[in-house]
Image 1 (tube, helix red, strand yellow):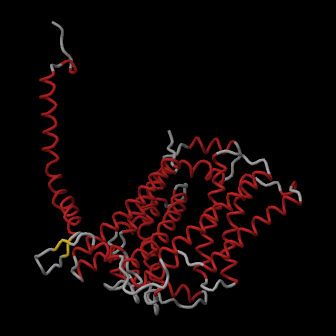
Image 2 (tube, rainbow, N blue to C red):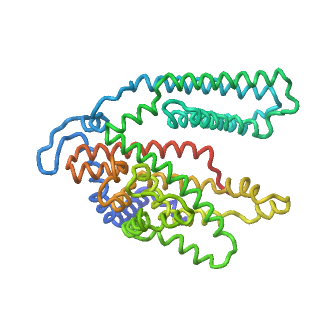
Image 3 (tube, rainbow, N blue to C red):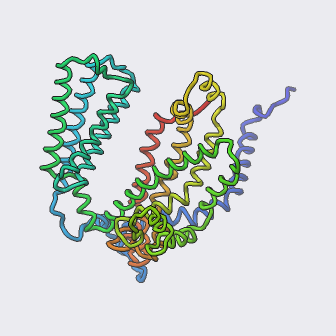
Length: 450
């Protein structure tokens, strides 16, 4: 009689063994599932249901009101002079004009030179798209009356995209260009800038509408402040962490001491860190103002002026979390095979070339992970604001009001549980959408070694 192996057991015996192992696994997981269910899954589900009810903490009665809590979040306390629909349409028209004209510039350069029609060449087109839109936003916010300084700043940033396009792989052969080609190039550029100036000077845009609307809605202001904080803290933290990680990856003295010193702020209490920085930001005898006085620079009221509220919070957060990001970057750097650098040395590559073609591409997976966790963490900023401003959302005009602080204020101070739950789910949707966008982009841009 032949012996039956593990895979040759009868179906009934195999099924019995499978279900026995499955139930044993779930029995081991049961304590964790119960804890997660009580403290995570149940609050998440209950808050979703609660977002459709009107309920304050002092009453046991809840009233179903549908989406009224969500409508309340975006309701303006006083009307805005601009029309949201018109501003959105005007902005869309401007973007379409920019894309059309930039596309014409792109094809013009293709006629002026033997441009490489590869997938990589399209990065130049994306660069000029970004620079044009960024210049548009800067131009609109730098001066309401379009002064000469604001106009030059905006057009200069728009021209940055043109410069990148010209420099990309030496696409334009300037010495071989004829006078007719120069005339065509200047004509298209003049038309582009004329259209930009015309639309900017005569039509309202979505950015201006949102700037006015946030002053009449605390929730919109919290979104504005949170996005402003994320744009300040996330890129700064990633760039500083990468620079520090590359320095610590070198064979220097006291390397372990420096690694520990950079990581200590991350494991230190947020309250303790914020209290220390509260003294450092003091406008009379703070360390930062003392450093400014050494260079004969004017003192800054870090914790009293509205314009410095979000930058102040960003400074504290970056200082505290840059060590953690540095450690992750350092792990990624140490995972890169040294043979790539040895081959680059043999070919005579410079330090910048090794970073551009070896380090940065092979760090794309690490950078992708850091961008996601850093962005999610930045949207949840709260403790630094609460400690630095002693329980207030900023010094004046709620300049430090963020999304999490808005949820806290609606829940704890105003005791409006439905509104707080609705705000929390709007925050969840914002983070979810941005994370999905990053995941989509990451599939095309992230490369893993192996």
